Amino acid sequence: MRSTAVARSGGHIWWGTPQLKQVGFYEYGVSPFQQKLFKGFFNPGLFKFAKKYGKQAVVVLPPALFYLWLSQWADAQYEANHRKGPDGTVGGGH
Image (cartoon, rainbow, N blue to C red; front, side):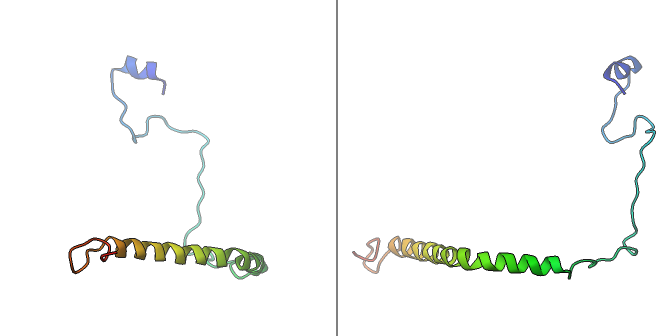
């Protein structure tokens, strides 16, 4: 529906309400009870994917784990340096 037709009709169009009957629109669906849930899940493609990315994990995983460890260590050091010591000084009296 065009905006001029709405203005001439004097009414308001509310969002979400059907305004015109659609022609030529078809929607198809399959019942969940007729679908095969894990069809094609365990096929050669899954094993090819695991093999391909398993080789890349050897290259990517060690640096990623190192930087994860480094960030955790740095966070722990930051917290330790900003904690008050027993004498009231910040940073443990360094």
